[in-house]
Length: 275
Ligand code: SIN
Image (tube, rainbow, N blue to C red; front, side, top):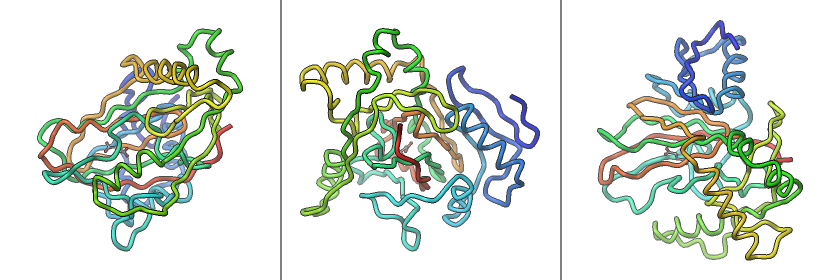
């Protein structure tokens, strides 16, 4: 499709587009906002360079796509509960997004998308990988698609958030983290396309199968979804932004730069219950 108010350069056939010719930190015209919505639907993850977000301007940009989400485990930066810090340095014991996932898929209404701004990046490394769950679904055999049709999976934040809190010495005794049942294959509410919706971080089991069969099928689906064929890899520069659609893409943050600093903030947009 053609765009008139933004420049869209595709990065891979399946997903990823570099967006230029627009300052997303300031006011945007209705046409620019409409074209950014279209670009997100077409390309699943949008990359921007040289955007200097403040917490307020990042929230303002996020609100053009929906209400903002507050993370169920990681507190926001002071004064901005919806702005999640993303930070790693020589003292870090973990980083956000170390395994493939769709953000907070354990929520009954998982986030529509996330906008990550990094102001500080390591000299090299710290890339983020994104994978198209449309491409992963499309590449399954007709037999496997028929088998998965109608199956549901249990997702929970317990495993990830308790681990995070343990490593950070945070006492989370008595806290209950979100969990939800979602279809294994979801339909994107904007494009109508089918996407695989299970991930290594939050999915525990497929409800309609015996445990050993569920383990085997999930293991196959994770390996399949993580194939390089369905991926794009983003190399960060200071003041870059990545805006991804959690309904159609998964991502993974590579922590290969310890003890260097990588720092910024994420704004996440609320979504709907998958169907
Ligand atoms: C995340 O939001 O999962 C972290 C992504 C990143 O730091 O690249």
